[in-house]
Length: 133
Image (tube, rainbow, N blue to C red):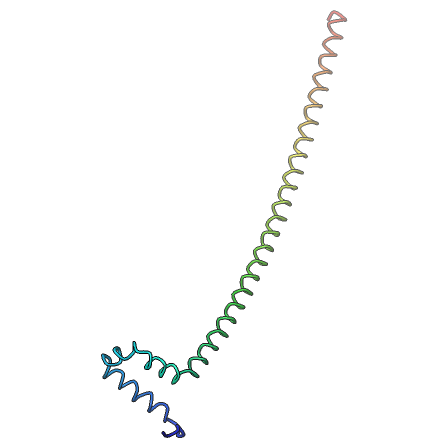
């Protein structure tokens, strides 16, 4: 058996195998189910399979790490935005509270002023009534 030594040998063999499989698809389908054929193909492509498997596992782990990092960043951003929104709403609530307190104080002052004026008018009327005028 010859060893693949020249550049392009592998491509030529791949081409021949591809043409053979395409031309003999029915035969390959029948043989494919057999244990001997399975073991032969498994052994033939064992290195490539292991390389692809290792690369796939590596890529999956990298993708998982990337997605975990993205999820953590998204979580941090969401928490930050929630805290900012909370701070904004707390500030708005404090401003509204201060405004309502000011309005209440103004209303209280107005009521006291009107009550004092009414008390003064009643006092004046009582004096007039007492004096008979």
